[in-house]
Image (cartoon, rainbow, N blue to C red; front, side, top):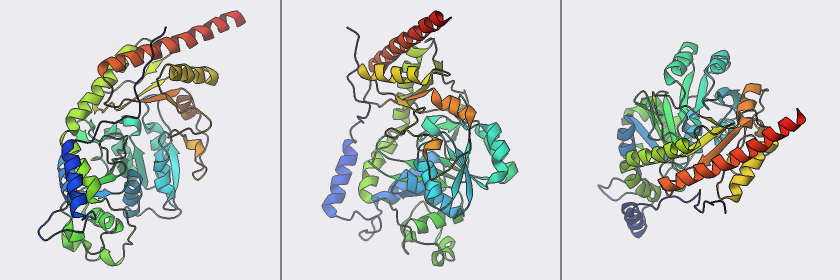
Length: 405
């Protein structure tokens, strides 16, 4: 009988005991709101912001309710409003164009390459169509940030980074989120730190930071932020920036702080699992692996590969055969969104022009989570199952081609 994988692709690690104890303590005293502090107390959210700013090397950090809220807040603080165009990846998840649409703006989709990064030639061609790029480091793949920033700087385009999948990653030693004017991160359950929902924003721009803090619903308590600009940065802005409440609470911050202290080690563990799957799939006929540049320090919390130019029914068969053996693949080429997976032409709120080169990549793109609850032996088994099922479908397709010939 063929081996079957029995692990769960959605099972995360438990919250560290230190985080559980801190969360219980917060529930005992009941001061969960970030500004509800005892005399002389620094809340968990403020401490998390200070620690995450130090982790990324940023001057300022703001913790918020979700990664999507983080992106919308950064865009709004950067001046994006109704009717504006915002450059953004065609290959991403729905919250990215959703953040743009939530402001009454609209995305200008930029193509994806076979490396699963934003197409820099397409970006250069479209750079004059918007003044902001919301750059998604989708599924942890980082583009050539030196060339990207040169294109955007030359065109006067402000870069805001969506780092939901690259917390702990870097390009040429610069942490993801530190190339643009702001970096936005997610702490949703399937990301690199887990608080169920949550988000973080970093920046070195004092006015942008002040605007984002006011937008998040600070009222006049901005002096209770540690990783924030000085009070004078808020004096003019506090009268004109609306309150669009989306604060993180102390309960979630208490859960996150211990995870931040072990993040670097866990990032290494994810990438070790990624390399195990990669090694098991290398050389599989019909399968294209994604080359990872030496300049990129990536976090392998998910795995992608391409079945380029395969018929849709053959890709669907691979997905079904893998599922029958316990391996869950997400296919970005499906015409109808399924679960978290959708594509640029699925978002009717964000009309898009035809993008045949991007369509070709997405048609063959398969995606798989790699939680840290998997061991290296699990990853080797997963790769073996995929290799066998892809090989079986490819062999049958080749036989059918021979008969037709």
